[in-house]
Structure formats: structure tokens, C-alpha cells
Length: 228
Image (cartoon, rainbow, N blue to C red):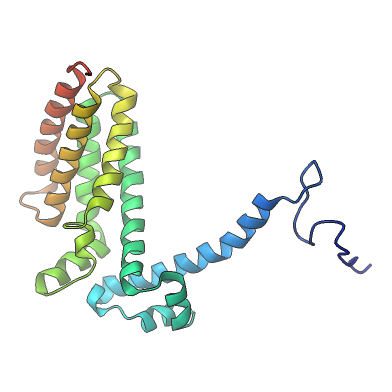
């Protein structure tokens, strides 16, 4: 049997009705957004692969488009500029790191030093082994690179997201602490970790051990300081 035509009395074909007969706009919007997300992910994946292979300075929008299987204009339509694509790529890497940091903190609960050590060591080791971060830092040492600022001078992306993860953990396990002192502790630890990612000075285990001692001191002081 063929499909009945849509006479305007009901929702368009493919858009389910809710219990009260209205259109399920949420489902329709989700269906519209999923292809767009897949497209953006494919473009970012292609940019990531090229950045690893040639450094960000060697990434070309046309090459990204070809690798993603879309037109160059499509890449510009989605991101607008190479700088915006760099930001999207950096944000995805940061989101991945922050998710892993949250998991490391959660695995050790209220044990401040163990949680700090696990999160710091994982972050340092992951950054050292991350081919994208390696490509960013290597190319930056030899010349200009547009991605490096997202880890250094424009590191608010890293600092804000990572500090939020630490504060969320502290709020669960150090609820009596001074919020301002906890925020300072989280921000300080994150800034130090980022600095050791950009300019490592010792083996990962040694750096993580020393930074976790400092984190224990900062969070302990914040936890025993009355709010006010």
C-alpha cells in the first residue's frame, strides 16, 4: 500500500507525535542535528590527522575537505576560518582530557593525594603520548603555530574546563572548605600541570609525585579554612 499524502492535518511523515498529538520537535531537531554533528566530527578528524602529520601550519582547508570527503566550501560553511577549526580541534582534545581527569579523580574519592596523583600523572602521560600535542609543540619550536596558544597564552579553554573538574570533585569531598581557597587551589594545580606539559623538566612520575604533594597541601589548607 502506498503512503498517504500529508494533507496538513497531522505531522510530516517521519516526525512522531507526542501523547497530546503535538509534533515531537525534540526528536525532529535531534534528527536534524545528528548529520551536522557527524559532518563536523569528520572535518575535525581530518584536521587532526593532518596536524599530526604536518603540524598545524601544514594544514590546508582544501586538504581537510578532501580527506573528509566534502567540498572546501563546506568546510568554510561549518567553521568559517582555519582559526575556528583550530579552536574546535583544541576544544575536542581538551574535552577528552577533562573527561579522563574526572574519571581519575572519581576513582580515588576523598583521598586527596591519591586522586591528585592519578589525575596529574594521567594528564602528563597522556599529553606526552598524544600525537596531536607532540605535533603542536614540535612545530611550534621551529616556527609559528596557531594551535599552541590554546595551551599557553590563550589557555583559558584548558584552565577553565580542568579547574571546573577539580572544583566539582572538591565540592563532593571537601564540602566544608572555603570556596575561594578551593578555587585558588584548583587553578594553581591546573596552571602548573599545563606548564609541565608545555615545558617538561623531569620524568612524568617524578613530576606527578611532586605536584600531588603540592596539591595535597593546597587542598588541605583550603578544606580546613572556614568559609567567609
